[in-house]
Amino acid sequence: MPLSVHVVTAEREVYAEEGVDAVIAPGIQGELTVLPQHAPLLTMIKPGVLRLIKGSDETDVAITGGFLEVKDDRVTILADAAERAEEIDTVRAEEARRRAERTLEGRGDTEELVAAAASLQRSLLRLRAVEKRRRRTPRGPSGPPGV
Ligand code: ATP
Image 1 (cartoon, protein in one colour):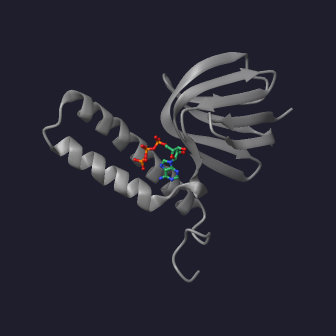
Image 2: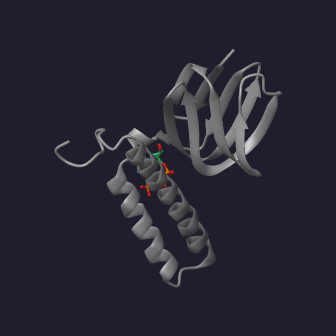
């Protein structure tokens, strides 16, 4: 019996699929793989790229942390913010990265620096999710122009 997977934020449902073969999540203690018949689990996940594998399809979701629950082959991921790779605005993520890097190079107070470090981490993981997808689907919509 494959998995039923829901990725939700306070704002929206980001991913909802039945028949998922594997969930690979950025667990706080390292990569966490959930396969069918996994024991019940409730754990925190850290900012990173969540991989959802269904047959030969892989969906990458940039996730800025949250919780993952497994119960009876249902996996629920409650995230602070989450975007499927194809939804990510690369220009926005690049701008966020540059803004955060500029702040980190400056002489901001601790609070500003901590916020900038978190923002840098979010922007980098978004760019990583886009890059992973681009490598997998070089002829897709985000592939080279004219293809
Ligand atoms: P920014 O500085 O660009 O606002 P952020 O890291 O502060 O980025 P978040 O607070 O993590 O943004 O997210 C706010 C909302 O914007 C969430 O709904 C999130 O899914 C969305 N979001 C953030 N960055 C992007 C992006 N590059 N592409 C698409 N959606 C994004």
